[in-house]
Length: 257
Image (cartoon, rainbow, N blue to C red; front, side):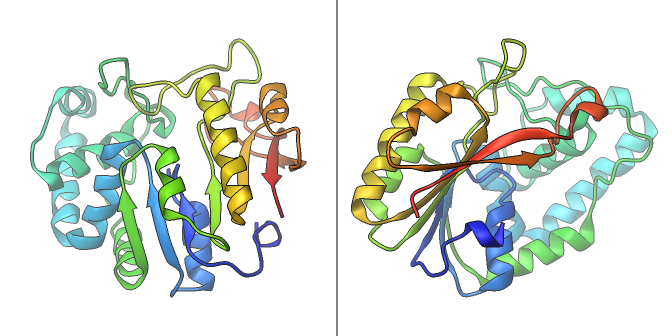
C-alpha cells in the first residue's frame, strides 16, 4: 500500500471509511496527519466516536453481551438483532456484538435499514477485544480526525489542492451472482458510480491526489477510462461462503498521480 500513496499531501479524506485500514496505516506512519473521514453508515461512524470518547463504557457493555451470549448463543443473538437500543453505548455495543457473531462478520441491512445477517458458526467469538479497542481509542484520541456521516459528494466542498482522497466504495459486481448489496439501506448503483467518477474528475481538476479501489469490472474501467492510471492487483476477499474462493481475485487501483 505504501508505494501506492502520494509521497506528500495535505489533508487525508476517506468518504467510504469502513474498517479504516488505510487511515490507520497512514496514522501509524504520521500520527499528526489531518484526516476528514466519513461514511453513510451512521452506526459505523457512531462506533468510531464511542471508541474514541467512551471506550471503557463500551468494553463494559460488550463484556455483558459476551456473558449472555455464552449462556444461549442462538437465542441471545436473535434477541439482540431485533433490539433497537437508544443510548450511544448500547447502539455501538450492539453493532460490534453483531459484527463479531454474525455469519462471516458481514454487515448487511435490508431496504428498511434492518440488520438481517444470520448467526455465524463460531465456537468462541472474540466479542470483547479489549486490547485492540484500547489501542484504537488511543490512536483516535491523539490524531487530528474529524468524523462525518454523509454522502461522498460532500467532499467537494472541503477539499483543496494538494489534499489526498481515497475512495473505497461498495464494489461493483463482476458477475450476476456477485451483487449482494447492501452496507447501508440503499444500494450503491451504477448511477452512484457515475457520480463518483464525476466527483473524482472534479477533484482531479482541483489539483487533488485521488486514488480509488474497486473490483476488476468493465463498468468501473469504462467510468475511469480517460486520463486515469488503472492497475490490476491480486487481492484476497474477506467474505465468501467458500473460504477457498477468497484468494486470487483481481481488483483494480485507479490513480491520477
